Amino acid sequence: MASISALGVGSGLDLTGLLDQLESAERQRLEPLVQQRQGHQAKISAFGRLESALTQFQSAAAKLNDAEAFATMKSTVSGEAATAATGGDTMAGSYQISITDKARGYSIATQGVADSSAALGAGTISVSLANGDTLDVDIPAGDSSLEAIRDAINAADGGVAASIVNDGGAQPYRLVLASSETGTEAAISAVDFGALGGSLTLDAGTEITAANAQLTVNGINIQSQTNTVEGAIQGVTLELVDTGDVTLEVEQDKGAIKTAIENFVTSYNSLQKTIDSLTGYDQESGTAGTLLGNSTLRSVDSRLRVALGTAEEGGELGILSDLGITRQLDGTLVMDEATIDELLATGSDDLAAFFAGDSETGGFAGRINGVLETMVEDKGLIDNATSGLTTSMESLERRYERAESSIASTIERYRKQFGQLDAMVANMNSVSSYLTQQFDMMNTQLGRDN
Image 1 (spheres, rainbow, N blue to C red):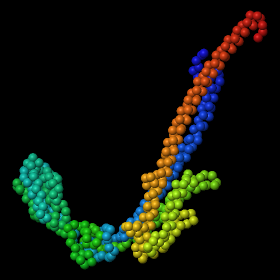
Image 2 (image 1 turned 60 degrees about the vertical axis):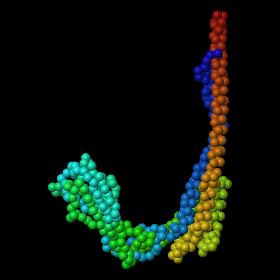
Image 3 (image 1 turned 45 degrees about the vertical axis):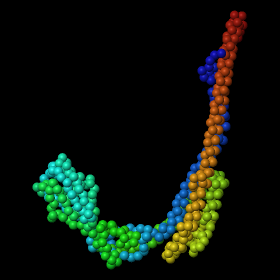
Image 4 (image 1 turned 30 degrees about the vertical axis):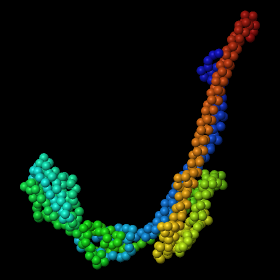
C-alpha cells in the first residue's frame, strides 16, 4: 500500500479538516473542567479581597484597642526659640519658657603651619576632658602631618573632634580641637602635644569656652548640658533653637482620637461594601457576585453584625449608638460628629473605657479585634476556605491532564485510521484508473466507440 505523507492527498478527501472537527468535539470534554477551575480561581481572588478589607478593619480596631491612644498629647509652641515633642507621660498644661543661653561646646586652635601635609615629627598628643576622661593619640614620625594628626584624633573617637582651617596668612593651616558634645562636662580642660610641642602650640586667643544651656520654665531655673532638654517638663523634650521666650501649650490630642474613630467607621463601611459586591445580584445583567450564597462569607458577615451589636458592660457607654454611631439600612455605619465632639469635650475616659477597656478584660475594639483574628489568622475562616478551593483546583488540574492525555490518544488513533483510509482510497483510485485505461484500449482495438 502506498505511503501517504499528508492526510487527504491520496484520497482527495478533506481528512485534515475532519480530524480537526473531531479534535474540537473531543476537547469539549475539557470545558466543564476549565469553567470549574476559573470559578475556583475567581473565588480565591474574591476571598483575597475580603481578607484585605478585614485586615484593614482590624488595623483600625487595633488602634482603638490601645488605651494610650486616648491619652495622646499634642504641643503647640508660640515663639521660635524652641520646639517641643511630647511623650507618653506628658501632662496637660501651659508653660512659659525663657531661654537666656544655649549650650555650646569648647574649641581652641593651634598656631599655624606652612604646609598641612608636611611631617611635624613623632609623639603622643594627650587631651584631657572636664569629665575626667583623657584621650591619648600616638603620632608616628612617618605619618605626622597636620592632616594625619587630624585624622588620627578623629579616628580615636574619644570625645574630641579635630579639623583644619586656613586663615590665609603666611602660615595658614591651623589644627582646631573641639569637644564632641556641648556643655561644661564635655569641655577640653588641657592639651599636651608632648614631643610635637615644638611644631604645635595652642593659640589662647582662639579659645571658646564651653557653656550649658540656661533657661527657666514657669520661673524655675533649668540648666542643661545640651540644647536638647529633657525632664524640665514631664514627658516633653525641648529643642533649643535660640535665646528668647516661648509659650508651650500641652493638651490632649482630641483630633487624633476622633480621626481614629472615623477610620474605624470608614474601614467598616469599606468592608461592608466589599461584602455587598461579592454577594450582590444584578437583575438587569443577570450577574451574581462571586461569593453569593457562600457559607464562609455569610459566617463572616453574621459574626461581625453580632460583634458590633453586643453591648459593653460596666461603663457609661454601652453600644455604638451611645457614641452617635448607628447602622443604616444598607449595613454601613454613620457617625454623628456632634456626639463624638461632646464626648471628647467632657473627657476621653469614657471613650477609652468603651473601646479599650482595661488590661484584663479589654473593650469593644479588643473584642472586635478578636473576632477578626479568627477570620484572618492561619487556619482561620478565610484560610480554610481558600485552602479547600486550592485543593479542589489541584484535583481539577489532574483531571484536566488525564482528559488531555485521553484526547491526544483518541486523536492519534483517528489520525492512523484516516491515514489507512486515505491510502486505501488512493490505491482503489489507482486500480480504477488502470482498469479504465485497459478497457479504453480494448475498445479501441475492437473498433468500439467509447
